[in-house]
Length: 614
Image (cartoon, rainbow, N blue to C red):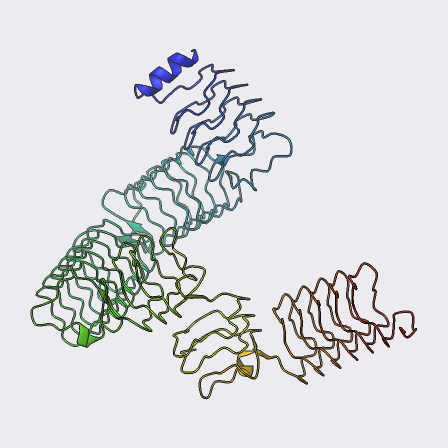
């Protein structure tokens, strides 16, 4: 087959070109996603920049082919020959291969994030959906939480494999060897396990439905599995983190069920009994809950975006910090329901006469005033917050992707590395502060800020104002503060393992590696055997300090005051002492070779050789 014929047939919708001879073919920059080239000959072919995502290249000959810049995400390279191939810039994220796959010399498929299909391999959380893994050797493999949606695993070797919480929806497991495999809490909706070897399998909490096929005489209820169907009894069932998106559980008995952090997108819970059920942090996007019994249910931080709750009973339920954007709560019983910190928008429908603002819920809309609001973990994608006042807001882990923040005030708001902002939006330019390990918050005003559960490890808090701040469960391990730092009344930073940086402090063997100590006053401090490697001590005062045996490797000591400082046996390798004042310092036992001492003052210092510098 020549190149033109191949491309013409592909354009017409043909995808199976198994066994084709395309050696030396020019297929550069072509979109060939999901093509089947099973055992095809592509030796010396030009595939630069070609899209081969999810292509079936099992047993294909790709020797000496040029795959630079090609996309092979999710492709099957099992048994393929890529010896001599050019893979510079190629994307192999999620590509699968096996022990028979031949790669170019010195190429590391692991570094390229390809996935090895082999016994005892680590594939936890891997996306293997829709792949052909028939007869694959995966005995003892770790497939915990792996996505195997509609994956073909016919006659696969999965004995003793870890398939806990794996998604096997619609998977074909006919004839598979699953002896002693762990399928606890796995999802087997629509899966075919007929003729599979299920000897000594742990199925506790696994999900199945009326379309799941088992070997003859296998009884799933005896294996402690959960049937997902209308009107079933799942009272007090343990379904935390389960993927039940799109499932029909209308009229089901789920009293006291554990569904926290479950994916319940589009689920039908109409007229279901969910009283006292735990649904905290569950995703209930577009869920049908009309007429459901949710009395005393825990829906804290649940995402109820566009969900329908008409006529539901939510009396005494907890919806604190829940997302109610577009939710329909009309004619719902909200007697004694908790809405503290819940979010709603102009499209949310409440029962007539219900005052949501008095219940502690927050309206998310243009121009709202929400200073100091805790929006940690909230999903605000696409929300309209033009001109809103979010000063001092807690935005830890908040998803603001595609949110309209035009003219919004984020002055003194706090965020972390997991916060997502709209493309091109710079929170620092808008006055917000990044809270992350090692960050500098020197002189920052965080008075009254909500820093609950903040990770402030090794943060510089010199002169920071934390009065009236909420520091509940905040982590201060190795944070630095000085006498001008202001904490809330009754808060003891030392009890939280923070370090006071001040004259005469005793910090022997302290770990201050990489710390920002610019301009700090540590005169007469005891820092013997302290780890100050790569610390920034530019312009600091360490006069008369005890640094005996301290590790100062790679530290910046530019312009530092080290007069009469004890540096006996200190490690100064690679330290920068340019312009430092070392008058009268004790340097015996220290190696000063390869150290930058330009413009440093060494008058009266005791040198490593025992002499006194003139």
